[in-house]
Length: 409
Image 1 (tube, rainbow, N blue to C red):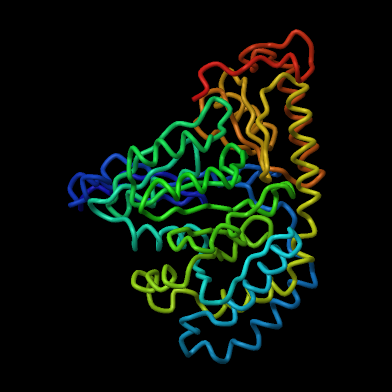
Image 2 (cartoon, one colour; image 1 turned 90 degrees about the vertical axis):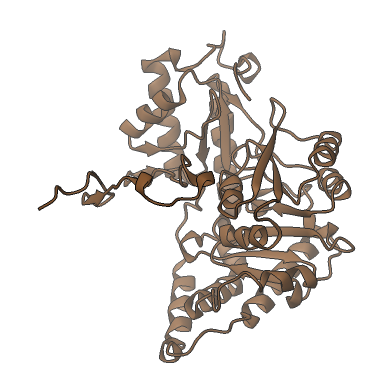
């Protein structure tokens, strides 16, 4: 009998076989790449993947249960391939968003696309407009799935580094887009993992300097300050512009896996060429519609999360960390001597954050009041135990004395 393959322990403690992929005819451009893999650990305080920390209210859970019950008997049939009701619900929600912001944006269901999370939405777009022989441009650091989705289609990923403060200037974007002449441009606002937003002038600069698709990833838009205007306001007259959003963050529906995009009807038509048949299940469509009917209630915790984010930012700055301005539900903070060591010390105290691979930095998402308190208490304990966790120790614990982070990209 041959020896069993080498293995590793999975999340449930079971052995998972790990074979040698060298014997497989893997595409050469995939060799050596690593899949998306944020740590998924069962610890008391989980602040690493930017989820909404608050569970769904009981009234929403009851409504979802009743709505799904009404559809169980029909699960022998395929779902609505065009997710008509969901499109209408999304338009109603977005109309309200734009009206409250004072923005004049005319939307209709033909401008809406939806899929299993915004990652699948983005994948559909890159499959349709990217692929072998085509180029996708991003401005890094940014969402780690953008290059993975690009590579998965066989397109070439190119990136331009942001400034030290992770901002983007319109003139920089215009020059780099014109230089690369990409088939697709990714812009993320608020940007993950930095939390920084970009102005509409940056989006216009990207659009005006290429003939390709411009994707604006607005996954965290509901956490932005009111002065930040959505790229939806730029859609009219720009058929190559796409705005991507999700129900995973502000709506507290990460487990639902529902993302959506807004674009010109002709661009939406193209996405039908690459989507799998009946890609959105009946259950997903029903639950998403029900969640949107309770949008005001589900979004009721956004302000609480913003308060937690701001409390984290202030406390970290006073402790001597470099804190970057955030329009999202998370905080990127720097001046860390070893992000891996800080990550482990927090984990030892039951708090999980994210080491996102930026030199001297880590990211923590806003939690409940209790989770926020636990994180800040752990930070204070770590600093008292090991002040050298800071790269440059401040002379006094005030934001103005926090030294700039060395080695920041």
